[in-house]
Amino acid sequence: MNYFLVLEKRPKDFMPININIIARDNSHIYSSLQNIDEFTRKYTSDEIKDMIKENNLVTDDYLEGNLCVINENKYRYKLFTKDVNMSMDTFLLDNIKNKQIMNKFVNIYLKYTNDNINELKEAIKNGHINIILQILFNLDYETIRNIYFYLYENCK
Image 1 (cartoon, rainbow, N blue to C red):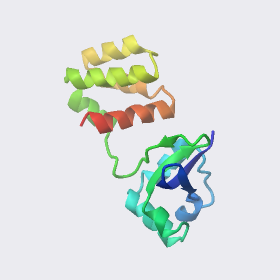
Image 2 (tube, rainbow, N blue to C red):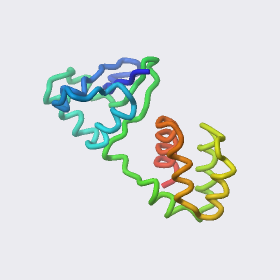
Image 3 (cartoon, rainbow, N blue to C red):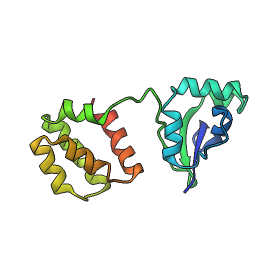
Image 4 (tube, helix red, strand yellow):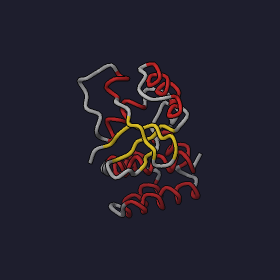
C-alpha cells in the first residue's frame, strides 16, 4: 500500500505533497508510512509547511489546512513530527509502576494484537522494560506507531 504526505484543506479535500521536492533529494522513495515518518520527524509541522510554501507547491488556502498522511484508501494518519517527542524507554521507566497507565498500555496493545500478551503482562509485572520493548518492536511498524500515538496522547 502506498502512503502520501498531504495537506487537508477540509475533510476529504487533500493536496498531495511531493516530499522529494521539499527535501531536495530524489534519491529516496517516500511511499511507505515509515519512510514518510523518517522525513517528517526531523521537522515541526510549521517547518514542513514553510518548506511547502517556499517551493510553491500549494495555494495558500491549503496551507491553512492540516498536514497528515493518507494511504490509497484515504485512511488518515497523524503526522509524526519533531513536536511529537516521547521516548518509549523513558515512558516505560517513568510509568512501569503506575498500574492505571500500564493497564491502558495493555488495553491498547490488545486492540491491535494479542501476540505475546502473557509475556507482556509478566514483563510489566516484573518491571522488565527490555522485554516489553522487545515484544513491541517485533510488531509491524503501523501497529507500533498506533500504540505510540495512543500513549503519547492519553498517558502523559
